[in-house]
Length: 144
Image (cartoon, rainbow, N blue to C red; front, side, top):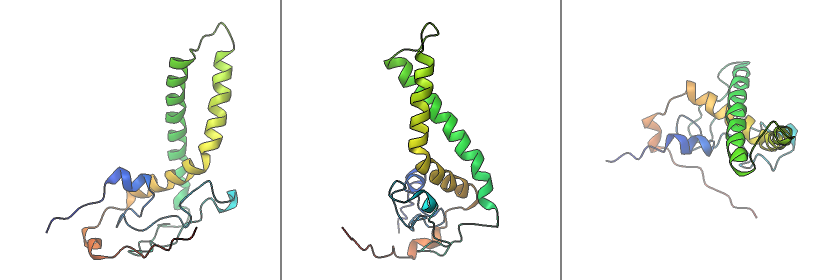
C-alpha cells in the first residue's frame, strides 16, 4: 500500500490541518471574503481528524513573530522586483515611492499573512500523522 503523504508546503499554503492535511483550518477558505473581525474564523478542531488547533490559551501569541518575519521577507521580495523593474536610487523619491507601494501591498495581504502565520506556527508543533490516512475527507458542499 503506497501512502501518498500530502505535500507539506502545499498543505500549509492551502491552510490544511497539520495532522491529517485534509481538514481546513479556516471556515471560509478565502481570507478576503470575510469581514476583518472574522479573519480568524477557525475551527476549534479539525473537521476531519479532530486535532485541536489552539493548543493552549495564548498559543497564537507566538504567531506575531511569524507574521513579522513573513512581512520582512515579503518586503525584501518587493524591494527586489521593484528595484529590477523601476530602479531605486537615493537621488529621487523612488525609495519613498517603494515604501508606499510596499506599505499598501503589506496591508492588502495582511488578512492572508495573519492566517498563514497561524498555519505555519501550528505546523511547528503538530506533526503529520500517518494514521489519519484512513479518515475520509469531509463532503464538500458546493454553494454558488
